[in-house]
Structure formats: C-alpha cells, structure tokens
Length: 70
Image 1: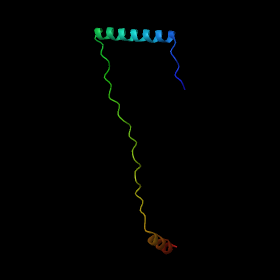
Image 2: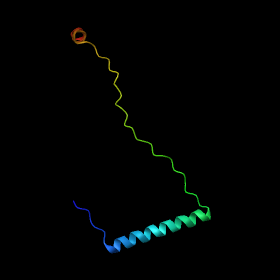
Image 3: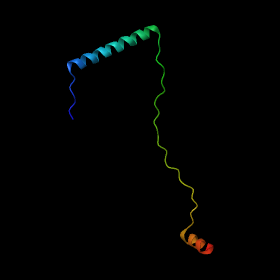
C-alpha cells in the first residue's frame, strides 16, 4: 500500500502545530512549570502456568485400588 503524499495544506498545518508546541513549551519553561515525572514503563510478563499438585498413582497401583474398592 503506497504512502499517502502530504498535500501543501497538511504540511502547513503540521509545521504550524510544531511551532505552536515549541513556543508553548518555551513559555511554560519560563513560567516555571515542570512536567510531571512519569514512571518508566514496565514490561508485562506473562506468568507461566502453575503446575497442579495432583496425586497420581502408577497404573498398577491405581487399577489395584479400583479393584479393591469395588
């Protein structure tokens, strides 16, 4: 998919927005406004599945247990 070429109107708007943003930043810095400190993003690790603590008997013991209970 080819990129959409910016028209003359869009490029003027983008440059005006950048100019306004930098000017607002300079004024805020002179006024003594400090940006809020943000915490660095922490990666979201997906935990591994917890192993189930099933009590499993070997096949022969299991069959023997079933025969004895019936």
